[in-house]
Length: 272
Image 1 (cartoon, rainbow, N blue to C red):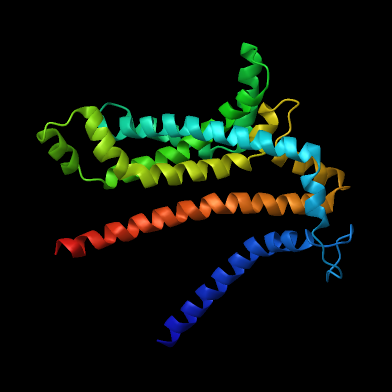
Image 2: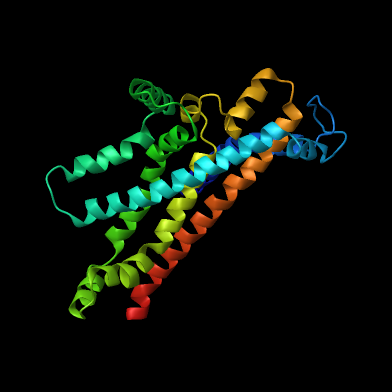
């Protein structure tokens, strides 16, 4: 018992250490975004929201923010369409090489971003496609598709085929089954996958660097401002705002996934 208690205490200490390692830098950035001084010193002597106003009225920040929103939204829409179609194809069809296709779909998320970015940049230059918003969208869609695919295919694997069979027995067409059975069943997976894809796309910097050309998304602007070191207070305010934007869709996606698990775990007890 004593050894078990020590192991549990050691595990909790390890978890606490990992959480501190992950979140202390983030909390520090948020706190310094309210520092009135241009030089970061601890403890903070004077608090202000001035840097948020500076960031809001910065035309370059606003244009970069809008470009990031556009790219993330378009990449998410493409990922929803292609990722869900790929999930349906891999789950429903039985053909040679199905596992290999599933691996290829997941591979872009496992590859380092710099490899994906360099490969896309070379491909665009080879076929003569100028770098623009659409090249950013294509680059982001390569890994956003994976997020949607994983969510949808996991939900389809947990969905009983008896619902589809019952719908067919009752005379429903394929479109009616899709509308009234399949889509409501996977709705939370689609929404959570879209939210996670949007968050992943919004803060992507490496792939964007190779596919944006002269355009600056918000992560690229942050990277450039940090490198110059002359706008650190404004950067802290922008980073704090980006963290909020990223946190909201991730939180909603986690809640949707959690609520679905609760519903599924309660189903056996209702049947009994």
